[in-house]
Image (cartoon, rainbow, N blue to C red; front, top):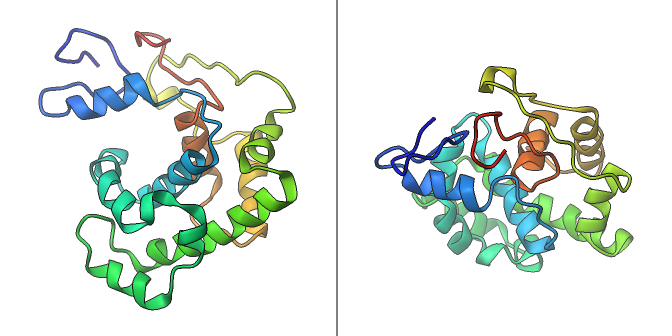
Length: 190
């Protein structure tokens, strides 16, 4: 898709959606190794389930406000009444299960940090020291939606009690945080 600036992108950049193109250009597929950012991306990818990424991206600031800047400790300690109040917050996706999953996922995230030293080392360890795989599909219809690595991560996270971490969500997460490079063949970032 060609943006208003004339650049070919996988997504975003059309008139009125330049923020989406900016996300594509500056964030999508760039390797992330900061645990707070990894947590934020994991929560936002889970929030996307059944929705478009554009919808969630428009609500990212609302999520940052509602969930204490994605401070993992604070999210893990949120009380039921605080989570319940968020069901009235139009700045986020108000699905009860998704809201409550933030606390549950933060608690599991902290456990992984304790066991592995950081979530980053645990997560990226699934690549066994290899560079992120590079795929260059010609069209979105040719883009993978899961992989053996996303299957393994999903299974491990579910075993630890996380929700909204199915293999398809985890593969989208891997794309977002640069664990796989899936920019389309015609994209300027390819």
